[in-house]
Length: 322
Image 1 (tube, rainbow, N blue to C red):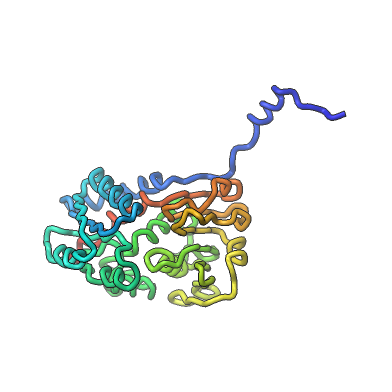
Image 2 (cartoon, rainbow, N blue to C red):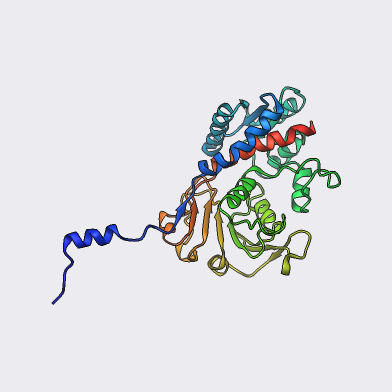
């Protein structure tokens, strides 16, 4: 005879079930933790710096980023101007802002043309007004693991690209970085998979995390690359190696999985998330199904609000060099 649980007992059992083990961390929570640093630097500066944003595309994600930037600037004592221009006029508009002493920082909402032409636009933005860390000087230092504009005086830190730096700030906030280890080695022992190798986010993020000691697998449609400072992280900077691995080989061994695939059709395979992994999505689309919370220990569904606070932080860091 099959026994049945009384309805009240069933309700009690459901009520007494252990809570979900996954912690969802919202971008606003991390952003709030960074705003005190930004407010302190702004008070020290003693004025409201002007950030100019250039929008020359119809990308909804770019428009959303611009709107968030405007809102965050207004709420935190920064001036912001959004200048909407035609693609063909963007180069001249950037050059004019370079020469305008009232402009403290410039951000261009990419993509505009795509490919090499966008890279050119990144390079004509004055290094002294580049708040995104995309100028050649900053990118060279980032990949070479040079952390200061002048390594001798260490007077000013190099700016880092906003979205990769936002992800780093999130990883610091949730405790992935081990503060007991020396600065620069604090990801030693961590394995991280990044599903994105764009020049704006995925590749610089892989380099930054590897330079901090992690073993990083960078995944895109062409295959998997490994970024590492070698056994015992003895190398000064990261090295990149092509591999014969695929996502199924590397993701199940990863402590952290970071996704940035800009399409509604992509969902990261839940079966490849190891129990207790940390999952972070920086795509404007949701790359993880909500079922990821059944396996992940920490899930960060979006990072946009952290990226904007990092943008303001970069603006303030760069002002002393002007």
